[in-house]
Figure 1 (cartoon, rainbow, N blue to C red):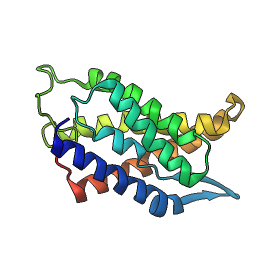
Figure 2 (figure 1 turned 45 degrees about the horizontal axis):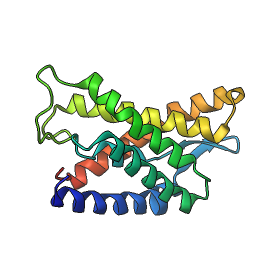
Figure 3 (figure 1 turned 120 degrees about the vertical axis):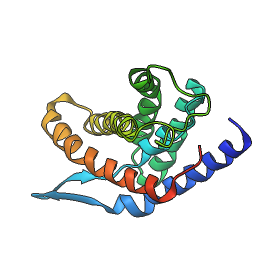
Length: 174
């Protein structure tokens, strides 16, 4: 990563951490005394890392982002695990979605260099992976598969919407 990429990613780390902890943590919707809809922007941090970032660095950066969220949420590594998983599967998502002619050397993962449909699919896969892994680790038992599924199905679109709005506002230069 170049100097500009490094600085922009550090700034993005702290901005997304701030938004997750102080804004999106306050959002939880539900019924019957249980919350089912949350907003997570952790997948956005992973998604916006430059496409040519080495895979081990993506996993390490994702882990530290999740760990930072855990420090504020007091969730004992659940976000770190979900973010690390997200960082790990990113390489597979990129391989599945790779255009026929491959990625440009300086391709931006925020959709400027790739189609909006590519960007939406890319972010949706990462967000779904993050959310399902998060709720699976939170419950830590397959007995709660209905709650995990319901929370995942409701949280994923809410998180995608929030991430889409953030990208539209900030349009990072990756």
